[in-house]
Image 1 (cartoon, rainbow, N blue to C red):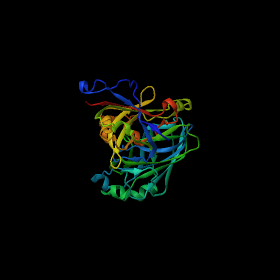
Image 2 (cartoon, one colour; image 1 turned 180 degrees about the vertical axis):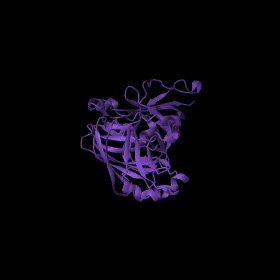
Image 3 (cartoon, helix red, strand yellow; image 1 turned 120 degrees about the vertical axis):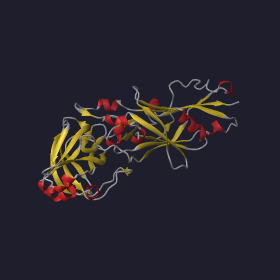
Image 4 (tube, one colour; image 1 turned 90 degrees about the horizontal axis):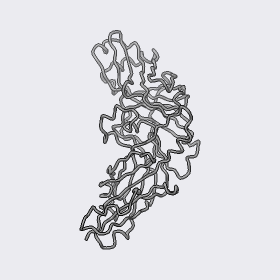
Length: 385
Protein backbone atom coordinates (compact mmCIF):
# COMPACT_ATOMS: atom_id res chain seq x y z
CA UNK A 1 0.00 0.00 0.00
CA UNK A 2 1.02 3.63 -0.42
CA UNK A 3 -0.26 6.93 0.88
CA UNK A 4 0.22 10.68 0.77
CA UNK A 5 0.91 13.18 3.49
CA UNK A 6 -2.43 14.70 4.49
CA UNK A 7 -4.41 17.50 2.87
CA UNK A 8 -5.79 20.69 4.33
CA UNK A 9 -9.36 21.77 3.59
CA UNK A 10 -8.40 24.97 1.73
CA UNK A 11 -4.73 24.98 0.79
CA UNK A 12 -4.89 28.09 -1.43
CA UNK A 13 -2.23 30.56 -0.26
CA UNK A 14 -2.10 28.97 3.20
CA UNK A 15 0.55 30.67 5.31
CA UNK A 16 0.85 33.71 3.03
CA UNK A 17 0.72 36.17 5.93
CA UNK A 18 2.86 34.23 8.39
CA UNK A 19 6.22 35.76 7.41
CA UNK A 20 5.07 39.25 6.53
CA UNK A 21 7.35 41.37 4.39
CA UNK A 22 10.24 38.93 4.54
CA UNK A 23 8.23 36.09 3.03
CA UNK A 24 7.91 35.37 -0.69
CA UNK A 25 5.00 33.78 -2.48
CA UNK A 26 3.96 30.57 -0.65
CA UNK A 27 4.51 27.28 -2.42
CA UNK A 28 1.97 24.53 -1.82
CA UNK A 29 3.05 20.95 -2.43
CA UNK A 30 1.60 17.48 -1.98
CA UNK A 31 4.21 14.84 -1.13
CA UNK A 32 3.70 11.05 -1.43
CA UNK A 33 4.67 8.63 1.30
CA UNK A 34 7.07 6.00 0.05
CA UNK A 35 5.42 3.26 2.12
CA UNK A 36 2.48 2.36 4.34
CA UNK A 37 3.27 -0.59 6.55
CA UNK A 38 2.20 -2.29 9.76
CA UNK A 39 3.93 -1.72 13.09
CA UNK A 40 3.62 -3.96 16.14
CA UNK A 41 1.23 -2.97 18.90
CA UNK A 42 2.53 -3.22 22.48
CA UNK A 43 0.65 -2.66 25.71
CA UNK A 44 2.03 0.42 27.49
CA UNK A 45 3.43 0.10 31.00
CA UNK A 46 0.66 2.24 32.48
CA UNK A 47 -2.28 0.65 30.69
CA UNK A 48 -5.48 0.77 32.79
CA UNK A 49 -6.28 -2.46 34.64
CA UNK A 50 -9.38 -3.64 32.80
CA UNK A 51 -9.83 -7.39 32.22
CA UNK A 52 -10.85 -8.18 28.64
CA UNK A 53 -12.19 -11.65 27.72
CA UNK A 54 -14.69 -13.36 25.41
CA UNK A 55 -15.32 -14.42 21.84
CA UNK A 56 -17.25 -12.66 19.08
CA UNK A 57 -17.97 -12.80 15.37
CA UNK A 58 -17.82 -9.35 13.81
CA UNK A 59 -19.57 -9.40 10.39
CA UNK A 60 -17.07 -6.85 9.04
CA UNK A 61 -13.81 -8.00 10.64
CA UNK A 62 -14.16 -11.69 11.43
CA UNK A 63 -13.88 -13.93 14.48
CA UNK A 64 -12.12 -12.89 17.70
CA UNK A 65 -11.13 -14.76 20.83
CA UNK A 66 -9.65 -13.01 23.87
CA UNK A 67 -8.16 -14.63 26.98
CA UNK A 68 -8.02 -12.23 29.92
CA UNK A 69 -4.98 -12.36 32.20
CA UNK A 70 -5.10 -10.43 35.47
CA UNK A 71 -3.36 -10.30 38.82
CA UNK A 72 -4.51 -8.93 42.19
CA UNK A 73 -3.16 -6.11 44.33
CA UNK A 74 -1.86 -7.57 47.61
CA UNK A 75 -3.48 -6.41 50.86
CA UNK A 76 -3.53 -7.98 54.31
CA UNK A 77 -4.42 -7.42 57.96
CA UNK A 78 -3.58 -9.06 61.29
CA UNK A 79 -7.15 -10.27 61.80
CA UNK A 80 -7.30 -11.79 58.32
CA UNK A 81 -3.98 -13.61 58.75
CA UNK A 82 -5.10 -15.00 62.13
CA UNK A 83 -7.98 -17.04 60.70
CA UNK A 84 -8.54 -19.54 57.92
CA UNK A 85 -9.99 -18.46 54.59
CA UNK A 86 -13.51 -19.86 54.39
CA UNK A 87 -14.78 -18.48 51.07
CA UNK A 88 -13.46 -16.68 48.00
CA UNK A 89 -15.33 -15.19 45.07
CA UNK A 90 -14.48 -13.07 42.07
CA UNK A 91 -16.61 -9.96 41.75
CA UNK A 92 -16.31 -8.65 38.21
CA UNK A 93 -17.85 -5.27 37.32
CA UNK A 94 -18.58 -5.12 33.59
CA UNK A 95 -17.67 -1.80 31.96
CA UNK A 96 -17.29 -2.67 28.26
CA UNK A 97 -18.96 -4.76 25.53
CA UNK A 98 -17.81 -5.51 21.99
CA UNK A 99 -20.38 -7.67 20.22
CA UNK A 100 -23.92 -8.84 20.97
CA UNK A 101 -24.94 -7.01 24.14
CA UNK A 102 -27.66 -9.65 24.80
CA UNK A 103 -25.37 -12.68 24.35
CA UNK A 104 -25.06 -15.40 26.98
CA UNK A 105 -21.41 -16.22 27.66
CA UNK A 106 -19.67 -19.21 29.15
CA UNK A 107 -16.07 -19.09 30.40
CA UNK A 108 -13.58 -20.99 32.54
CA UNK A 109 -11.15 -19.70 35.14
CA UNK A 110 -7.53 -20.85 35.45
CA UNK A 111 -4.71 -19.81 37.76
CA UNK A 112 -1.59 -18.35 36.18
CA UNK A 113 1.40 -20.48 37.17
CA UNK A 114 4.33 -18.24 36.30
CA UNK A 115 5.52 -14.73 37.11
CA UNK A 116 4.65 -12.28 34.35
CA UNK A 117 5.10 -8.62 33.56
CA UNK A 118 2.43 -6.49 31.91
CA UNK A 119 4.82 -3.77 30.75
CA UNK A 120 5.55 -3.47 27.04
CA UNK A 121 4.05 -6.87 26.14
CA UNK A 122 3.80 -7.48 22.38
CA UNK A 123 0.52 -8.90 21.11
CA UNK A 124 0.43 -12.68 20.89
CA UNK A 125 2.27 -13.37 24.15
CA UNK A 126 0.83 -16.04 26.47
CA UNK A 127 1.69 -17.31 29.95
CA UNK A 128 1.49 -20.75 31.58
CA UNK A 129 -1.65 -21.65 33.50
CA UNK A 130 -2.91 -24.56 35.58
CA UNK A 131 -6.03 -26.69 35.18
CA UNK A 132 -9.57 -25.31 35.21
CA UNK A 133 -10.63 -23.95 38.60
CA UNK A 134 -14.28 -23.39 37.76
CA UNK A 135 -16.69 -22.68 34.92
CA UNK A 136 -19.24 -19.87 34.96
CA UNK A 137 -21.93 -18.34 32.76
CA UNK A 138 -23.22 -14.80 32.55
CA UNK A 139 -24.90 -12.34 30.20
CA UNK A 140 -23.07 -9.57 28.37
CA UNK A 141 -25.75 -7.28 29.81
CA UNK A 142 -24.86 -8.15 33.43
CA UNK A 143 -23.20 -5.27 35.23
CA UNK A 144 -21.85 -7.52 38.02
CA UNK A 145 -20.63 -11.10 37.58
CA UNK A 146 -19.98 -13.06 40.78
CA UNK A 147 -17.88 -16.24 40.51
CA UNK A 148 -17.63 -18.35 43.70
CA UNK A 149 -14.42 -20.37 43.79
CA UNK A 150 -14.58 -24.06 44.81
CA UNK A 151 -13.89 -25.05 48.42
CA UNK A 152 -11.00 -27.26 47.27
CA UNK A 153 -9.24 -24.30 45.66
CA UNK A 154 -9.93 -22.08 48.70
CA UNK A 155 -8.48 -24.67 51.07
CA UNK A 156 -5.40 -25.19 48.90
CA UNK A 157 -4.66 -21.47 48.46
CA UNK A 158 -5.54 -20.42 52.02
CA UNK A 159 -1.90 -20.10 53.23
CA UNK A 160 -0.96 -18.07 50.14
CA UNK A 161 -3.90 -15.65 50.39
CA UNK A 162 -3.07 -14.92 54.04
CA UNK A 163 0.67 -14.58 53.47
CA UNK A 164 2.02 -10.98 53.57
CA UNK A 165 3.96 -11.88 50.39
CA UNK A 166 0.83 -12.92 48.49
CA UNK A 167 1.84 -10.58 45.67
CA UNK A 168 4.97 -12.66 45.02
CA UNK A 169 3.43 -16.08 45.71
CA UNK A 170 0.21 -15.72 43.70
CA UNK A 171 0.31 -14.75 40.00
CA UNK A 172 -3.36 -14.21 39.21
CA UNK A 173 -6.00 -15.73 36.93
CA UNK A 174 -6.85 -16.18 33.28
CA UNK A 175 -10.41 -16.14 31.94
CA UNK A 176 -10.85 -18.36 28.86
CA UNK A 177 -13.98 -17.96 26.68
CA UNK A 178 -15.96 -21.11 25.83
CA UNK A 179 -19.19 -19.86 24.24
CA UNK A 180 -20.85 -16.56 23.42
CA UNK A 181 -20.83 -13.70 20.92
CA UNK A 182 -19.27 -10.85 22.86
CA UNK A 183 -16.00 -9.70 24.34
CA UNK A 184 -16.50 -7.93 27.66
CA UNK A 185 -14.32 -5.76 29.87
CA UNK A 186 -14.35 -5.94 33.67
CA UNK A 187 -13.19 -3.16 35.97
CA UNK A 188 -10.95 -1.73 37.02
CA UNK A 189 -13.20 -0.07 39.60
CA UNK A 190 -15.48 -2.50 41.43
CA UNK A 191 -13.72 -5.71 40.33
CA UNK A 192 -12.13 -7.63 43.19
CA UNK A 193 -11.16 -11.01 44.58
CA UNK A 194 -13.18 -11.10 47.81
CA UNK A 195 -12.00 -13.46 50.58
CA UNK A 196 -13.48 -14.04 54.04
CA UNK A 197 -12.29 -15.70 57.24
CA UNK A 198 -14.36 -16.26 60.36
CA UNK A 199 -13.65 -12.75 61.65
CA UNK A 200 -12.46 -10.63 58.75
CA UNK A 201 -12.62 -10.14 54.99
CA UNK A 202 -10.40 -8.62 52.32
CA UNK A 203 -10.99 -7.29 48.83
CA UNK A 204 -8.00 -7.73 46.55
CA UNK A 205 -8.34 -5.14 43.78
CA UNK A 206 -7.49 -6.02 40.17
CA UNK A 207 -3.84 -5.23 39.48
CA UNK A 208 -2.01 -5.71 36.19
CA UNK A 209 -3.98 -7.07 33.22
CA UNK A 210 -3.21 -8.31 29.72
CA UNK A 211 -5.53 -9.46 26.89
CA UNK A 212 -4.29 -12.28 24.68
CA UNK A 213 -6.35 -11.61 21.57
CA UNK A 214 -6.50 -13.54 18.30
CA UNK A 215 -8.38 -12.67 15.12
CA UNK A 216 -9.42 -15.23 12.51
CA UNK A 217 -9.91 -13.59 9.14
CA UNK A 218 -13.17 -15.43 8.44
CA UNK A 219 -14.44 -12.49 6.37
CA UNK A 220 -12.66 -10.25 3.87
CA UNK A 221 -11.96 -6.71 5.01
CA UNK A 222 -13.31 -4.23 2.40
CA UNK A 223 -10.89 -3.49 -0.42
CA UNK A 224 -8.48 -0.56 -0.08
CA UNK A 225 -8.79 -0.45 3.69
CA UNK A 226 -6.16 -0.59 6.45
CA UNK A 227 -7.36 -2.06 9.76
CA UNK A 228 -6.06 -0.58 13.00
CA UNK A 229 -7.38 -2.23 16.16
CA UNK A 230 -6.82 -1.95 19.88
CA UNK A 231 -5.79 -5.13 21.68
CA UNK A 232 -4.38 -6.72 18.52
CA UNK A 233 -2.96 -4.06 16.23
CA UNK A 234 -1.39 -3.35 13.86
CA UNK A 235 -0.43 0.32 13.92
CA UNK A 236 -0.13 2.24 10.62
CA UNK A 237 3.39 3.48 9.87
CA UNK A 238 4.41 5.86 7.07
CA UNK A 239 7.73 6.89 5.55
CA UNK A 240 7.86 10.41 4.04
CA UNK A 241 10.49 11.39 1.49
CA UNK A 242 10.02 15.01 0.39
CA UNK A 243 10.88 15.78 -3.24
CA UNK A 244 14.45 17.10 -3.59
CA UNK A 245 13.21 19.82 -5.99
CA UNK A 246 11.81 21.64 -2.96
CA UNK A 247 14.99 22.04 -0.95
CA UNK A 248 17.78 22.03 -3.60
CA UNK A 249 16.83 25.27 -5.32
CA UNK A 250 19.38 27.14 -3.18
CA UNK A 251 16.74 29.50 -1.72
CA UNK A 252 16.05 29.45 2.03
CA UNK A 253 12.46 28.76 2.98
CA UNK A 254 10.17 28.16 5.94
CA UNK A 255 7.63 25.33 6.31
CA UNK A 256 4.63 27.35 7.42
CA UNK A 257 2.04 24.63 7.62
CA UNK A 258 1.73 20.88 7.25
CA UNK A 259 -1.46 18.87 7.53
CA UNK A 260 -1.82 15.10 7.67
CA UNK A 261 -5.30 13.68 7.10
CA UNK A 262 -6.58 10.10 7.17
CA UNK A 263 -10.13 9.18 6.22
CA UNK A 264 -11.95 6.48 8.18
CA UNK A 265 -14.48 4.12 6.63
CA UNK A 266 -17.38 4.25 9.07
CA UNK A 267 -19.97 3.32 6.43
CA UNK A 268 -18.90 -0.34 6.30
CA UNK A 269 -19.47 -0.58 10.05
CA UNK A 270 -22.85 1.18 9.96
CA UNK A 271 -24.13 -1.03 7.14
CA UNK A 272 -23.01 -4.27 8.80
CA UNK A 273 -24.03 -3.92 12.43
CA UNK A 274 -26.80 -6.32 13.55
CA UNK A 275 -29.32 -5.41 16.22
CA UNK A 276 -27.80 -5.25 19.72
CA UNK A 277 -24.26 -5.42 18.31
CA UNK A 278 -21.89 -2.98 20.02
CA UNK A 279 -18.72 -1.97 18.18
CA UNK A 280 -17.00 1.01 19.85
CA UNK A 281 -14.56 2.67 17.44
CA UNK A 282 -11.17 4.29 17.80
CA UNK A 283 -12.03 7.99 17.72
CA UNK A 284 -8.95 9.74 19.12
CA UNK A 285 -5.46 8.93 17.83
CA UNK A 286 -1.92 10.24 18.20
CA UNK A 287 0.71 11.00 15.57
CA UNK A 288 4.35 10.16 16.30
CA UNK A 289 7.39 11.03 14.17
CA UNK A 290 11.05 10.12 14.00
CA UNK A 291 13.83 10.92 11.58
CA UNK A 292 15.40 8.04 9.68
CA UNK A 293 18.24 6.61 11.75
CA UNK A 294 16.83 7.81 15.06
CA UNK A 295 15.60 5.08 17.42
CA UNK A 296 12.90 7.06 19.22
CA UNK A 297 9.53 8.43 18.20
CA UNK A 298 8.19 11.76 19.46
CA UNK A 299 4.53 12.62 19.98
CA UNK A 300 3.71 15.54 17.69
CA UNK A 301 -0.08 15.59 17.39
CA UNK A 302 -3.47 14.29 18.51
CA UNK A 303 -6.68 14.17 16.49
CA UNK A 304 -10.29 13.20 17.16
CA UNK A 305 -12.36 11.91 14.25
CA UNK A 306 -14.67 14.62 12.90
CA UNK A 307 -18.22 14.20 11.60
CA UNK A 308 -16.88 13.46 8.11
CA UNK A 309 -14.83 10.53 9.36
CA UNK A 310 -11.47 12.32 9.12
CA UNK A 311 -8.47 12.36 11.44
CA UNK A 312 -6.69 15.66 10.76
CA UNK A 313 -3.23 16.19 12.25
CA UNK A 314 -1.68 19.64 12.04
CA UNK A 315 0.22 22.13 14.14
CA UNK A 316 3.62 23.67 14.73
CA UNK A 317 5.22 20.40 15.88
CA UNK A 318 4.37 18.68 12.59
CA UNK A 319 5.51 21.64 10.48
CA UNK A 320 8.71 21.96 12.51
CA UNK A 321 9.51 18.25 12.12
CA UNK A 322 9.13 18.41 8.35
CA UNK A 323 11.01 21.71 8.08
CA UNK A 324 13.94 20.60 10.22
CA UNK A 325 14.41 17.23 8.55
CA UNK A 326 13.00 17.89 5.09
CA UNK A 327 16.07 16.42 3.38
CA UNK A 328 15.77 13.16 5.31
CA UNK A 329 13.24 10.35 5.51
CA UNK A 330 10.70 10.98 8.27
CA UNK A 331 8.73 8.07 9.71
CA UNK A 332 5.22 8.70 11.01
CA UNK A 333 3.24 6.27 13.16
CA UNK A 334 -0.41 6.42 14.25
CA UNK A 335 -0.96 5.17 17.80
CA UNK A 336 -3.66 5.04 20.42
CA UNK A 337 -3.17 7.67 23.15
CA UNK A 338 -0.83 6.48 25.89
CA UNK A 339 -2.53 6.87 29.30
CA UNK A 340 0.62 8.60 30.56
CA UNK A 341 -0.14 11.55 28.24
CA UNK A 342 -3.77 11.95 29.34
CA UNK A 343 -5.43 13.84 32.21
CA UNK A 344 -6.14 11.50 35.13
CA UNK A 345 -9.75 12.74 35.24
CA UNK A 346 -10.45 10.67 32.13
CA UNK A 347 -10.09 7.48 34.16
CA UNK A 348 -13.70 7.86 35.32
CA UNK A 349 -14.99 7.52 31.75
CA UNK A 350 -14.96 3.83 30.84
CA UNK A 351 -15.79 4.55 27.19
CA UNK A 352 -13.08 7.17 26.68
CA UNK A 353 -9.86 6.66 24.79
CA UNK A 354 -8.15 6.33 28.19
CA UNK A 355 -9.16 2.64 27.98
CA UNK A 356 -8.30 1.96 24.33
CA UNK A 357 -5.48 -0.43 25.23
CA UNK A 358 -7.94 -2.62 27.15
CA UNK A 359 -10.45 -2.88 24.31
CA UNK A 360 -10.99 -4.22 20.80
CA UNK A 361 -11.98 -0.84 19.34
CA UNK A 362 -11.20 -0.78 15.58
CA UNK A 363 -10.98 1.74 12.77
CA UNK A 364 -10.77 1.17 9.02
CA UNK A 365 -8.60 3.69 7.18
CA UNK A 366 -8.95 4.24 3.45
CA UNK A 367 -5.64 3.40 1.79
CA UNK A 368 -3.89 4.83 -1.27
CA UNK A 369 -6.20 3.06 -3.71
CA UNK A 370 -9.35 4.68 -2.36
CA UNK A 371 -9.50 7.68 -4.70
CA UNK A 372 -10.39 11.01 -3.14
CA UNK A 373 -10.48 9.45 0.34
CA UNK A 374 -6.94 8.13 0.16
CA UNK A 375 -4.57 9.53 2.80
CA UNK A 376 -3.16 12.76 1.39
CA UNK A 377 -1.29 15.78 2.56
CA UNK A 378 -0.29 19.31 2.07
CA UNK A 379 2.85 21.28 2.93
CA UNK A 380 3.09 25.07 2.60
CA UNK A 381 6.55 26.60 2.21
CA UNK A 382 7.45 30.29 1.93
CA UNK A 383 10.80 31.49 0.50
CA UNK A 384 12.71 33.79 2.85
CA UNK A 385 14.35 36.86 1.22
